[in-house]
Amino acid sequence: MTSPDSRAFRALQHLDGQFSLLMDEQFEIIWHSTSVERVLGWTDVTGRSAIEF
Image (cartoon, rainbow, N blue to C red):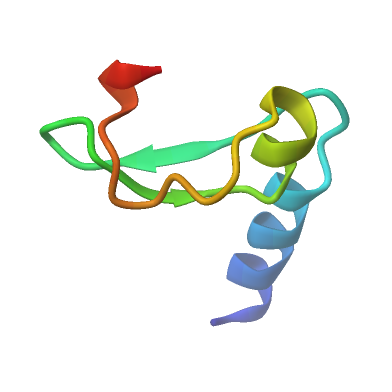
């Protein structure tokens, strides 16, 4: 990753009270920030449908 990419990635990981999801066209979760567990109590949901939640 380039320096700007690294900074953006770190920023997504450290937002208090917020979380980030990256989904594909079918709303399958490709990536989520580590804060998703802290905020919602979800463990690893990568590969699952975001519509379920």
